[in-house]
Amino acid sequence: MNHPPAHFATVATPPGPFTVVVCRSHGSDVVLASGWTDDVSELLPVVHRSLRPTWVERADDLPVLAAVAAYCEGDVTAIDAVPVLQRSGPFLEEAWEVLRTVPPGQPETYSAFAARCGRPAAVRAAAGACSRNAAALFVPCHRVLATGGGLGGFRWGTTVKRWLLDHEAEHATEHVAAPAGAPELRLVREPVPSGI
Image (cartoon, rainbow, N blue to C red; front, side, top):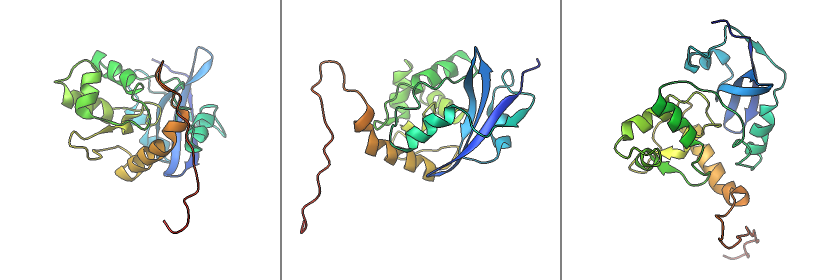
């Protein structure tokens, strides 16, 4: 199958360089792969062979990078609407969609994620969905922790995962809508009195 060229761009983020690979689909850019690297060749092998571009071209800028910048500036929901395209078997594709429903600032364990996927006994399969996710950040596998509460693994390193989780914990209350009927919560930052 002959695919049109994909485009990639790299941007600086607090935890390190972030590269995204996109293709055009129905008139807009769709993320095929992304991660904390400045080497696009690290991303191409994780794109499913049916989607893997035959070549990639560097772009000076991509519209999706605006969502990455907004995320890094504190709008941790800016990545939610970015279109992503991944292929695999039915469970993995469903699990990647479900990953996008894990709210920022509210990480889950692999067990809870498996239950969210409708297969509470499939903890290893849920962990496998996280490890095979090609679209890091946009499909937020970093929000899933080891069942014992530890960080667990992350393709881009636990230092990056820790930064993402801390960043979301700090900013999630500013951008995550309260459930319907819940009282409105406002984040108030007051200076700490001296001597405390």
